[in-house]
Length: 190
Image (cartoon, rainbow, N blue to C red; front, side, top):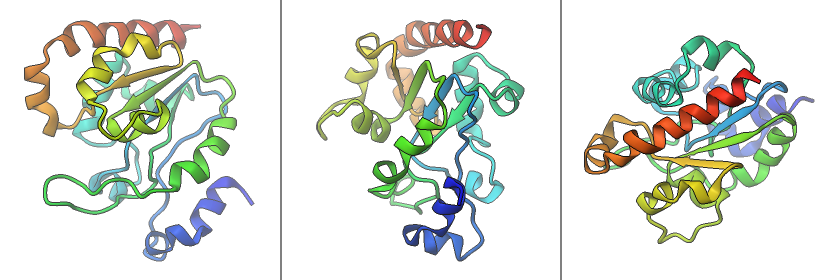
């Protein structure tokens, strides 16, 4: 049985698979960069195409890559903290379900032996992979991104909901994004 089939058949995912929903992730063996975010949004869950929304457009812009490179090059992997849309909260989406990353991420990452950079999108991925406490401030983590290099590159979630954060923190698009693009360009071109 493949990992995909195991995920589909996992009793943790029954409420989703019983509705015909497929887990959203992409783990090509040729990937050089993996993006770990929180969970698919409703639009992505319904389309079945990862980062197929306004957040994805902004993410690709920040990465400095085209849709073709993102989806078709085999150089980009995507593993969310949850494979399914977790539902709506009062403001935004519910957090990813606990236990998914613990159960599946290491196995999926082993399938991608050529990873040179892991982009951690948002606080859930950053707190999990950087082993941060729950009080860690995402702004501080992202400002200190260089201390996590070369393995991890933490960034803010590209959701339009973060437009206010981006306006308050212009250094992110002025300094962090160009560094991200430079590193990605070097990795992908080799």
